[in-house]
Image: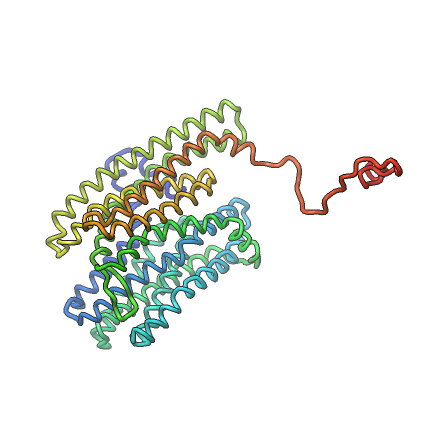
Length: 493
């Protein structure tokens, strides 16, 4: 992310209206554009292929398959990203680039194994119990694995600072999917929903192949040090817990409402709540700009203050260390407040636009009743995630674990309670869970500020430690004065 901040600093540095628009467009392109490309492609395929006039069963099966592909591919890939990112940062700092390919292959094996542990049992259930055709199940599973590969490889392109290529690869893959969908439906006369699913699967696979080819172009040699990578998974297991709890917290409230009267069961396998899921998607879009603002403001401005403090620690006076620390935390507080103000204004404007235009596109009734509370919850949620990223800066993994775990747990429990309320309060679980996580993360940041000197200067060791046999407790033997503590004095001299 620091690489994005450096690029944006150059763009915004000119301080003109044009460069501000360019900077906002660039930050949007490298953060949320891939998601909009995929969604836009599905909407275009649906429109031109007359998806709305196809069979009700086929439409529901396609919608459920795409929903599950996206949710569970994120749950499979996200937990390991932080550990891999930490390992790659250390490798790049040490300039041991031969360690990158072993990291890629090891992380890929772990991620694919996790994805298969979730996907294979479900696919068997879908085929045997749901009576879904084997070719349809296999295509959906391939699309799921392909998207896992896409999400996994995106991390390495981010480390290489090829942010724009991520969007380009998504665009090329979805363009190929769009063209192939016409070939499958119009040329080969496939059923519309299956033709779209097969085209999307091939598009995801092409995107993953282009990402892998770029990674291999950057890194050629492999020193086969796979155990070193596995050691990081053991050492930084807290990062896995943080990312898993945060990602699970994004969807755990959906899982709760999948078991209410809003639920819909497709093919005796897929369980979902279309009304609640649509409201959740719209609420996320309402606040997704917080990601862009976080990169454009917090990362861009805070990184310089953090760098100045690090330089003062390594080679400055005590007065310089204290001054840069105070400036760094003042900047942190200022940028968090600016993020809240800007995102609040944007969210209110988008919220009003949604209330005006959504009914014209058929989204009304229960969707609009659920939407306001979810929009408020996701507003707090994205601010909370910004605080988790800042905790990463100070290596406060304990604080980040507590924040993400409490956020996930509270969201789950309060969502269960919210199912008994009126629809306007269905998003209460997201609100309370995000607010609780926000408060905990804020208190941890204040704790870090008070104990930063201790964290920086008192974590080292003066003497090397090792595992060995415990020394004898004997200090002096009166009957054998030449032996001191079980060790000959000649050996000690």
